[in-house]
Image (cartoon, rainbow, N blue to C red; front, side, top):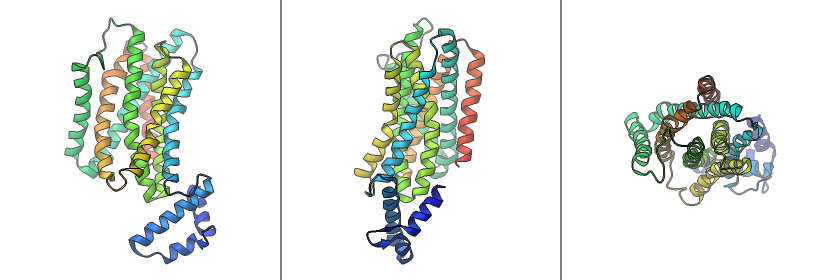
Amino acid sequence: AFGWVQSKIVGEQCHGGVCAASVASMSHGENGSAMTRSMEQAILSEKLGIGTHEFALPLFYSLLAGLSTGLGGMMVLFLRNDSRANDGVTALTLAAAAAAMLTVSAVDLFYHISRDIGLDHTLMCCMSGFGVVLLVKTYGPNLLPASKDGEAADGRLLRVGLITAVTLTAHNFPEGMAVAISTMGSAQLGLKLTLAIALHNIPEGLAIACPLIMSRRHSRLSAVLIAFASGLSEPVGALVTLLVFRNVVTQERVDYALACVGGIMMAVAVLELLPEAHRLNRPGMTLCGCVLGSAVMGASLFVLG
């Protein structure tokens, strides 16, 4: 549908007295292709009502992807006040988030990124990210205290929620950079990437908000706002790329950053989310969460390519 709308816009709309179809037919070489892309994106941005600036469409796409994290966080508004029932939901949520993070990290790292920067570089970056979490857990107890069985459950859930929020905020930043780079090259590719990111941001937002509420240290509103704030690092990453690093950031460098953050996400999933889900003593819900998270994320990645 998006391709049809854009073809209608490019074929029928005129911008500044020059028809976009005419511009496309007169374009030759790399400069002509770049001019055509800029014209198409300007017309599409104007049609969407977001202005005609060349940055409007990349920022709009990255904002949509980022806001989906907050939408996932809003699912906690449907939690009941029954503590026992919420334990099951929390176990399901944490396990699903961990499985989704492991799935998307594994697919991104060993299927996409390893083909671009090589398996050895991918493993090196992934291990570096994983090692950072291990070092902080070992030598930075004030920043990331280690989990203890005797520690109050509320404190553990609070820590898990905050760690997840920080990790996913770091993960969303290079994703915003990738959306900006892709959209500047092709509006269709940018939209496809936006949809893929938005789908896996929804369970991530739920994974942030649910343990925060269950810790009884945050209200439902504050937990949802933290999830939204985490997602806003995506348009920030896009804006920084467009304003500061436009001629410096390449897809290859974004892949290196995503590989490092992928290692961090895998560490958080294995060392924090899954152990906390296990501590809630709801094995059935934990298993269902793992299967659900992997299935949903794997299906979305497959369908969206």
